[in-house]
Length: 113
Image (cartoon, rainbow, N blue to C red; front, side):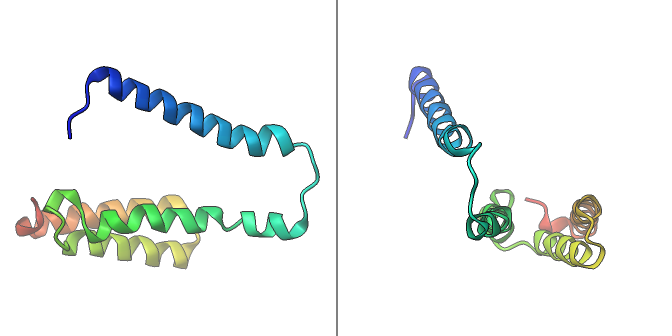
């Protein structure tokens, strides 16, 4: 399916307005009101729920390999998870995943698409 430049800009604008309305409805309209402890407790888990949903498809069906399972990306995701759980340091976990990915890609040329 092909979109013209005008259609793409209209889509971008509409998505921007939609994102603003969603955020404003939560932050602008009820941002200065007291929220129940039940709601605040559940909001802490939003990032924990969203991040795996964004990352898992990129690891299991990467575009770089045509959607095929890739040992380099699995190794990088595993290293990131293990280092993150072990050290509780996000930056170190991300760096270890990146180093693992490029190291495995270097030693396994067949993993490069």
